[in-house]
Length: 417
Image (tube, rainbow, N blue to C red; front, side, top):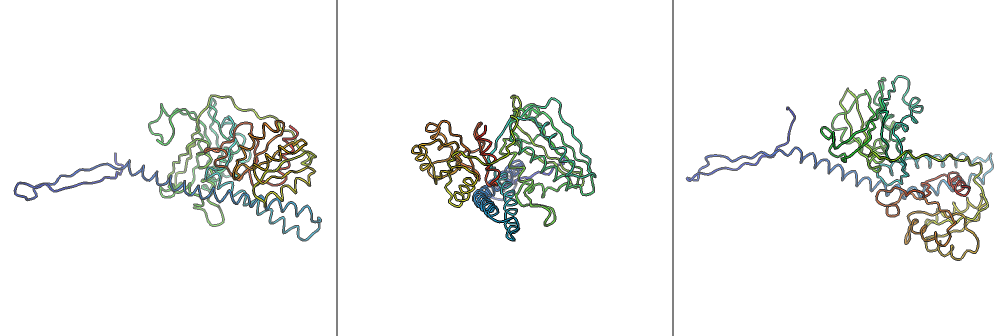
């Protein structure tokens, strides 16, 4: 049919009775599929190794950023409003917040972020982003939606799904500098029935598909092979970090989905994301109660193995009016729970600690303090959450690095619930 193929040629001379060569035995083997599988495996191994590196860096960096943000908050609260040092401290805080956004992208790519999945409908997720997308892509790009009316549901983290839609749409916008059309589609797909012509890496079964297409510049094969690598970008210096598509890749993979790309130079690009379909009803969020204050008078047990974090966090909580008990590990936290003669209203514990994980600690203190609420926190978690790093239903979690105000609001929300 005109497609190029890779062949392996084996040839050997055939000798006659007079020991002269009177023929050649040749065998041609089509190795196209094997080559493709080898390239796919090599790319997968490369992405995995880079992901491990990125995840390890992000974990340590998140602890440092949490300490920086906490100490900035303490310093700012101690300085008078007109102090000349405030602007410098605020610049440090702003830089730390920006760095935190980058580490979140690294964790997403490396599939080491902690997801909080819910049953959702992709149509609703798309509609929630339309207003923001309209502002982001500009007036010279036509935004078109083609949403399947009878679309099935899937289980995913709604915040991360929104991030996928935004990242792909912004990428499409950048591929259409002179304007064009951005099309977002949803559809149901049964891979078992319609396997022909679809990427064999997609798991068999029922899926819901999110497609985002642009009429932009498109990509050649070499660029397509590298687009999901972190820090790879075709944009001019200073106009992109190269983390947008790698973030999308990590979110989709960690959510149990698959992403495929179709692109031709001068024609445009289409990203297709396949999420497993579920037959459950959409989860309905409880209406949130606005928290006016982050202060309180309750008793909080803080469990954190990093001393650089224990000091600023305990100081901030104490300034908000709480009685703070501090433990450097799970064993010390158990001793406090057993020996403290008054109520402990809430425990804030890191998930990853030497000796005893935060989840194990939470299970053990449940018998000692059945009415004590627990808030988990981490830069990321491997063994404590499991290989897929999906937080179990009902567990409360706040991702490091967090601003002190975020921690205060989350604590107040739990105590008031």
